[in-house]
Image (cartoon, protein in one colour):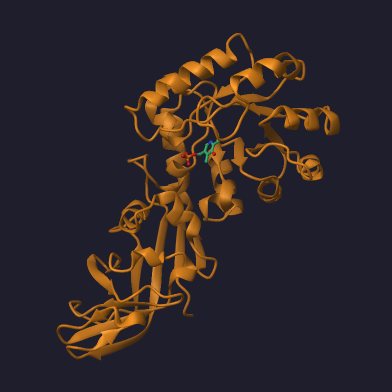
Length: 344
Ligand SMILES: *Cc1c(COP(=O)(O)O)cnc(C)c1O
């Protein structure tokens, strides 16, 4: 088998959820959008339900249907995009709870699913999703006659604890929800770490569950090993890969591994990528191509059978930093050609 091999540690995932639940003064939900941050929404959601999560969030109604399929009845599945035209049957059939983002969505919900649960999303300054204060004032009374299950908002700068935006959004959220008896939710992973003021009735961690920053204590969930397809020895002056972008300066042992940008190993990593043989780093040389990467393994004591891209010596955040991006993007870019093994 030549595909890369992804190992997903569901025990570490569950431990991360429990650790974040421990930090939360509120109930702790789990965000499993984008196929569980690339790790498989069904498997991930099942493990988190087993750990004790009772509320889940996805971005799209279609994702919610898949999570319902995996979990069965008895848990709440919230849809962050709300109730879009065309979603009504999915929401009904899979018992989803749309987080309504606008007056239009609220009216659509009341008209098409009058007795079904829903939540509301208000915008406290991020200018992305949710009703802004004037819009919210206009429909607040109408919405309250329908007993929403939750009112939520999202923080723009929670990964920067000292950013003034955090306190501003907290104040706005308090003002917008003052006097209501509806359960409230403001914090994702970053918000949990800002402390109890931000927790309200429900926290909604995503990235911290999957082992990413800003949850520094997170246990690593993902390991990615990539098989070596071929080994060769270069003479000084030999060039490697598209564009001859790398030239051997010494006799070089070169490994060609079975992964590339089609597998989510970003081409922008060219010149900055390292893979590991045990604890020994090996630099990738030449360009990252679609299905293949070439790696200088000259300094290893033996020819490797595979090299490790994500593992104990390089987690998602270190790889993300090398690529100039964030752990979220590394995870959600993981390709669908990898074989996957789930450890419980
Ligand atoms: C993605 C998302 C979350 C989870 O955020 P993390 O930073 O991954 O913890 C929570 N709430 C909303 C509205 C989101 O879009």
